[in-house]
Length: 520
Image (cartoon, rainbow, N blue to C red; front, side, top):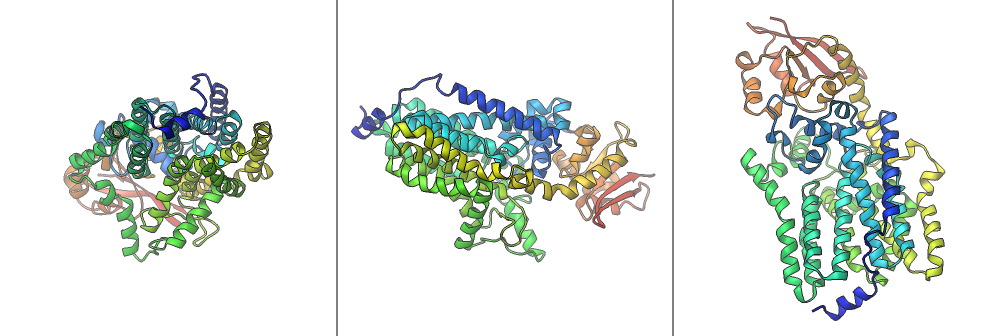
């Protein structure tokens, strides 16, 4: 039996209509496909180093010296790579990067549909939902990211899917909708770690809003949603002997930061400084979504509270809160060009404020009388896209600027290495290398990843690095100056099995990449 509060809420919401939003879904699909093709035609698909890494991790599950499950690795969660896997198995899609962009684009479309359906249910009419969707879909920073093998559109899809499932539950009070929320939340926990942060709060939502069957709904949600974190803890425990390897292992963000500090690096802005953590996140959010949408969205949150959508505000505010907390705890650095050190790093994380701002736009539209809502939606959308319409150039997209500036050196030395290695490499010769940015050389040269020998090959890699005189049998090697491969090969410049550094390619007069070859 439903509570009075649930019945009142349900009466104010429109009935379910499976066909509602079909036009929005079609428009999203066309917009997404157009953006993917445009970004690919400009050669930007793999500007982000992380985009190339996600693409190659997915590929190496089936294309490696030792293919299989262990190639999933640690630190980065597995679902994005599993979604990319079927597409990256096709050589043309792997080499172009499109194989990694397709899942990101599909998640952009699904996330927009979730947003439209959720805001329609929350505010009871199409104009608020259309305004929210337009503010989301016409953001060029998101359009760029969803056209690349990045995970932002995937994590936003899960956040908006949770909003949709919770909106359905508020209306129906059905355990099936709690299970739907659990499935979406579980997917979110396997994409980005902020999904873990959401779980206890969403469980609290079901306790507060679940009516007479609150415990059953909460238990249903928790049993499904908890499978993601439990699986990843078990994965790390079995493969790395530490369930928290992703958090405190050699390649975790925590240890990378600690190594930088040990070598004399500076502390991240916001490290145990709440005002600065908020300042940097706010700056990143304004750059990613535009100042008009940021301010209108925040103003609209008051309207959302007035319309009794407090639970939706709280749910969508959790992810931005996670990043502010992460800045404070030094887990996630964010650099923006407007604040010291005046550079770009993780600036794209400001996009996580976009769903909350879109909810505010929908609430502002819903605050007006019905006859004015369509006009208000149009005017609000025009205001939110004005920063991009007024200066419609790629330099005005902070995510593109971040990827372009941070990849310039990598793209330069990758091309030099490809031009040297491609005509000289013979299939089966083998390449000893680290699995980092260097893997892009193989992709661009059309050399299968299984020709390489890298950290993902486990004990065989470790044996070759420890005793190259006994175990290293590859003809070629690719090293970054000073990395483990470079140090290993320098021990092999003398002796019965010798390697020689045949090329050192420099960028800005600094050594950037080394090519080694077995000469005896």
